[in-house]
Length: 241
Image 1 (cartoon, rainbow, N blue to C red):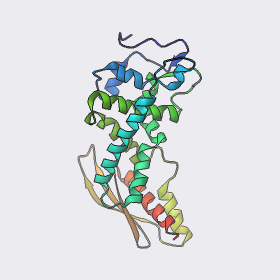
Image 2 (image 1 turned 30 degrees about the vertical axis):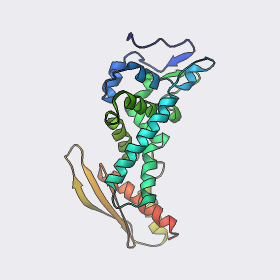
Image 3 (image 1 turned 60 degrees about the horizontal axis):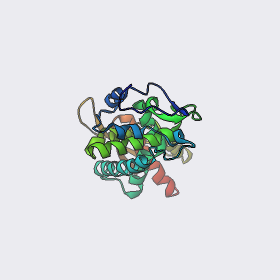
Image 4 (image 1 turned 90 degrees about the horizontal axis):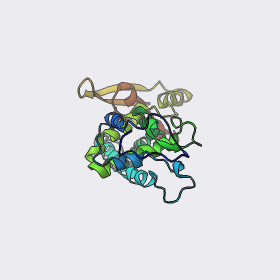
């Protein structure tokens, strides 16, 4: 056991492998100067049920939520110059919502290192716990190393939102159905540009239906098509077309 890692009280269950925080730091690509920042980010409020003076990751979550919001907003503003305010807000919400943050948390194995109450039986499947912890981790890194140190976790949240792993709606299918109901031709998708190296490409896709078009960027052709379809579908739906 790391000498800096405090032993959990008896009413706390640690999901698995709680002691190897060095391995977790490798997973997130950041080495903490102050291990207490990391330790606190991993403590869910349920772990302190009935305990006075207990500290959980709630304050770090509050801070991390603001950092995630600002850095995500900056990315979206800079990378989607043709999208108006409503579309920017939808893209922003896709990144910062709890389900997306939980998906990002699973990709770094965050559930394996958390302290939770025994009443929480499945940390891996609990979006609320994981989403909050992901924001807390961002807050902890921000306190420890500043905004630039958070970039990897911000990029991961953005990537999860781009690939649509947390999306309950397939907007390409929704747009296709919308066109069919009105007896319009099927949506057409066009690659406007492909930039970046092979390991980190960026596609700009344009989708059109009956003369109405939208554009979006994505790390894959499929991801960009989904985002463009969402923007156009919601725009058409709002206009009552």
